Length: 108
Image 1 (cartoon, helix red, strand yellow):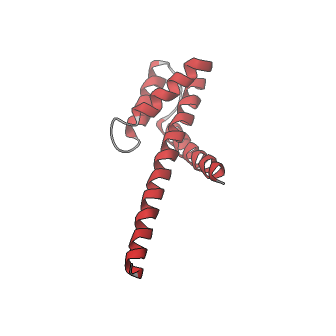
Image 2 (cartoon, rainbow, N blue to C red):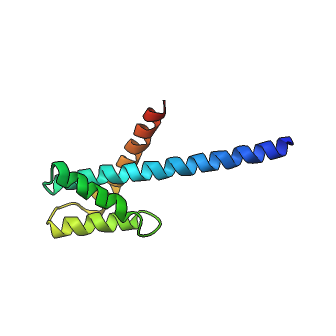
């Protein structure tokens, strides 16, 4: 195998690895986001866990984060939870950072 072929295979493996990490981090972020939202809505235990699973599943509706944001925004509105769009999006960003850290720690 030529060095070009080896390099190409290396890039393909890195791309696949990065895509897998992004998927795992997004799913973890969505679970953390769901638990955060559930707590604000007064849910605990199994109810909070089920809600978090629903947030993870909401992300399968369309590419990107808007489906998750809409779920949280709609549920907060229905429960009269006072969180601005900015606060929700900021929490999404913060929890993505946390999810990445958790996954990286698990790999070590």
